[in-house]
Figure: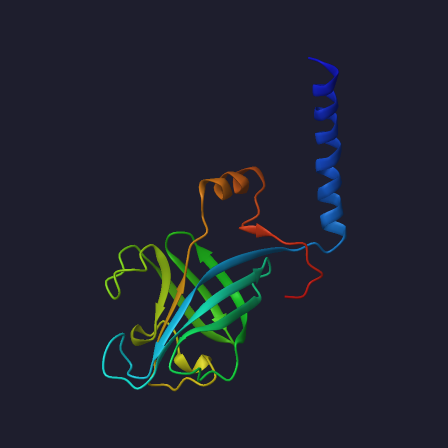
Length: 183
């Protein structure tokens, strides 16, 4: 083995522990980031006669302690009835390929993994909560009424690369972000 290879090996053994020590002492937090959409209308069912319908792009940021933030960005519809576009997340738990359980603003939300989307035939292999099935309360979102239909969809992030990373480093995260503790 030549000297360049030995230098690389030695640097790896020095840098890896240094990074681990730095992250543990300097409040570097892991965060999971998911993307998806939220569809809503005022008729109580996915399709039907309604006066308002709209869709939001969502970003879900969750710290390793299960707390985080759900951000909604209005995408399309006949005006935006929401009074608020950021919601606190707590008790986040994911069973890959089965369900996501979390609280949004203190209210329980269950998103089941849907292999074959029979509602829109578009959102296959995503985690989805339907208000007409009792998985999500529309009134969590300030501006939506109790009779609204809400469908929260989150795209999975699990890949072979993240599975390998989890095997080598047993931390269940999708993306690392160096953070000062603020979302």
